[in-house]
Image 1 (tube, helix red, strand yellow):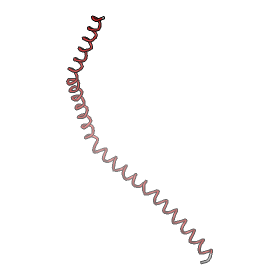
Image 2 (image 1 turned 45 degrees about the vertical axis):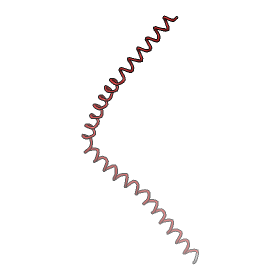
Image 3 (image 1 turned 180 degrees about the horizontal axis):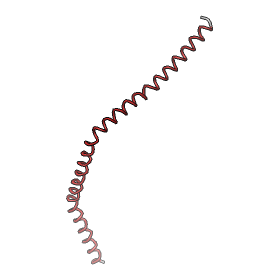
Image 4 (image 1 turned 90 degrees about the vertical axis):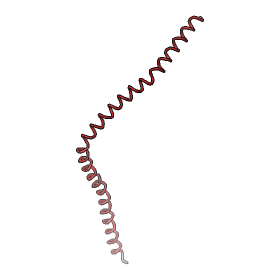
Length: 94
């Protein structure tokens, strides 16, 4: 092989590598573009469902908070009474 043939092969391989870089760079961009279009369409259709789900979650959170306060109330009351009696007896004992 002559040096001229090697130079042509080198130039062709550089061009092929450049094309490969362009394709591999454009492929993720194309996938991202398609995914973004799909998600926009999905969001348009899912927005009413998401608002209803958010409303249900907030309502459930209110019920959970009230239930937790009902469960915790006797323990808080007992702890307060114990602290009050402890303070009372400490003052009496001096």
